[in-house]
Length: 86
Image (cartoon, rainbow, N blue to C red; front, side):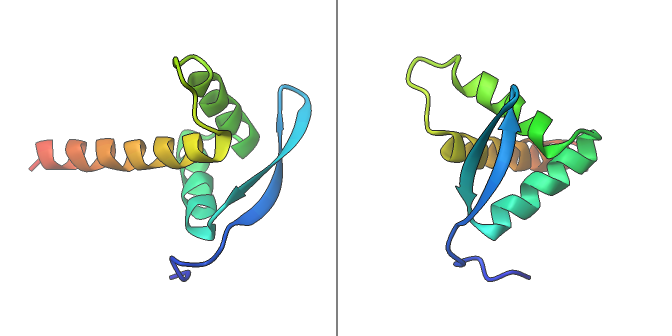
């Protein structure tokens, strides 16, 4: 397992034809890759969707924060679904 306390790593992504860089801890990059693979979508497309969702809220967080929140919410929802199936 990757050290959970590893500092953020900056990577470039493309959203709506524009390149931007995002700094996330390796654990979150891994979770993002896994989420994209599970949905059968490229990481750029998933990040674009998260970005579109975040700008719809009254006080949007930064993109990196929105990605972290989205991933934690996804994990929470998966755990809730698993508990309901017991």
